[in-house]
Image (cartoon, rainbow, N blue to C red):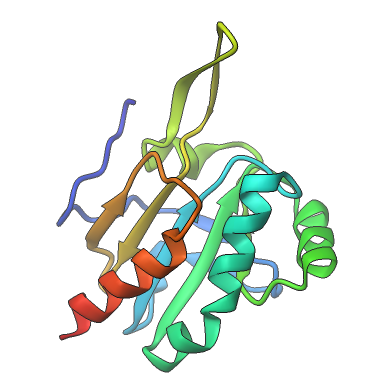
Length: 158
């Protein structure tokens, strides 16, 4: 990992297109909390479960002024299909070139079935409205993850 972010770091500068036809600009964050989670690929089992889990808590996140954004290298067309097919309630950002993925330090060497390759480490960052990293979850296991993130949000907001 080249750019591993730590708690209290300021997030890198970036602009990404969002699935609601807006942009996520790190310089124009609002006074709210952001959950930015990185995942490998749309319409795969783990990624689908993670997106559906975050979607199932969306009203609770909104009530607490928290925006949830999933980021992968998939195209916006694939994201829109994924949102429609899975009835997702969260926003997705397309980072086809992988620049933001690298800036957050989640483009890593992975191993599966004896093969080594580069891929996205499933990771979640809780970001403040002023662009500070408040919490990091790395090597995320999908089961119960969205609930753990929500619990951390409650803790931060106390």
